[in-house]
Amino acid sequence: MAAAKLSDRRPLTERYRPDRLSGVVGNARAVDALRRWADGWEVGAAPPRLRAALLEGAPGLGKTSAAWALARERGWSVVEMNASEARNKGAIEAVAGRASLSGGFTDDGQFRRVREGGRTLILLDEADCLSGRAVEGAAKKTPKRPLRDFLQTRYGTTAALAAAWGLGAAGAPPAFESWNEVPLTGGRGAWTRLAPAKRDLADWEDAGSSSDLSDRGGLGAIAALVRTTRQPVAITVNDPAPLTRYSPLFRTGVVRVRFTPVPAVELRRRLEEIIAAEHLAVGAETLDAIVGRSGGDLRAALTDVEAVAPLPTGALQLSVLSGRDRSTELEQFVSQALSAPRWRRSVEIRNEIDAPPDDLLPWVEENAPHATRDPIRRLDALETVARAERLLALARRSRHFGLWSYASEILTGGVSIALDRPRGSMPLHARFPSFLGQMGQMRVSRALRQGLLRKLGRAVHSSRRRANSEYLALYFLMFEPGTPNFDKDSGARFRRLTIRELALTPEELGYLLGSPPDGPEVAREWSAAEAEPEEPTVAPEKPKRAKKSAPKGEVEVPPQPAAPKAPEPEAASKRKRSQKKLAEF
Image (tube, rainbow, N blue to C red):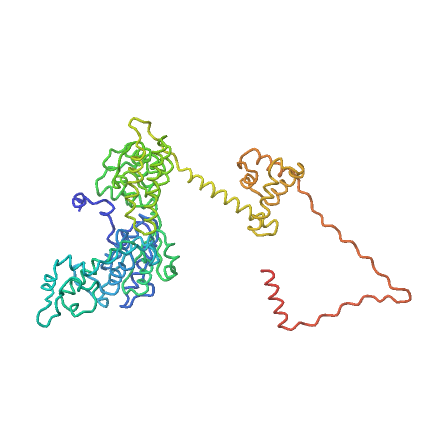
């Protein structure tokens, strides 16, 4: 067994895929939920109420491996459609739709019907990247070639066409005398019933239809599949939001199985077992670093083990693991890529950095203008970046992610050639994209503004929108130092009262003052507001009303107690209670 393992040249992630659900590391609850769902499919021939399982979780947690292990454990065959295939409406209906209505095959290739226990697990991998609408990003279809031109290219002369189809023979349709008599489309002539003509018509139809490799309409096809399937369906997603937003079926009509990161103790135990079985040399300190940086991702941890195993144990193995920080990795790669003009293939780019071109774009866009002082070369480089950005937008819109490789090559090799930096020039030191930092600052500023508007709206008995349009500018003016036409002492007292009444935080106070929260202005106003004693608020006494005396000659009658009110009817009492509840609401 060990010799077979050592002679196997597949990656560790493929060699140690579990054959049973008991071999799935961590996620015991997810495994139990999958078993219960599978048990429902094996009770009778009718499908259960929830026909599909939605496997949710980050990449590398074992969702796809668990689905395959379930199929092997139950003896089910598997029909898989992953992200590398066309998964549009037509493809899903043609592949998964047919498999969902038929039986399954045993390990020796024999067909078994559903009533005999023949099950086929339909596995749709990474379904959260599919498109929902059937018309989204629809590509323009190539105009179909006329049938006359197709046949003329295939046969050359009408005599050859007549001989191939058998035209002009006894009992057969007459032959065409010229190509002008051949119709542009199929039509309904007698010759369309001939077998050779049917084959040519089918070839003409196939030649006119363009292959669709997009994902448009995929979510709608999956929803229809989940409703009508007679075979178990497993759907894996990194983020379930695209599916749950598309249809409530993916919220309540499927079994939702959540995969979480593998605990560090179980992850380390599994890595030690694999290292011992493969006779690899990995230091204890290196193994701790692999477990810590994997974040519970077993696939990433096995990839790291395979990367450091050929190196000597110690500092050299740790040096390989020290560079996975995404920002540092991109900074070094962009500095190297833009320093010298050289074309890079997409495979080379993927081997050097573990980042999609969407993450690479802002780095190149930020640093390309600083790589040269020549305005012409700078303009050429920015136009090259714009072409790559258009390709990325087209890939997102049409779901043709094969365009990513072209965009990566243009962003690296294309931009470096456009810059054409002379040999021997100073190496470029890439900087972090400024707009990403500005976006983070704006997010913090928006959060402070919303919290301040919420407090201000409660204080002035108004909504946040009205507080923003009518009151916030006034408060900015009051907190501005040296405001004209405003008494200095009154302004200071207003600021102190505002800080106390609104319970402002140092960050919110700094936002109003336009200074950092740990600056001297904020500290001065904050200490002044805490030092000022609160003024006691005494309610004014109501003036007593003078008692009226009776006119002369009249006897003052003492006040009589009020007569008890008659009980209200039940309907009136109920109506008043309802009105009171509505007013309180």
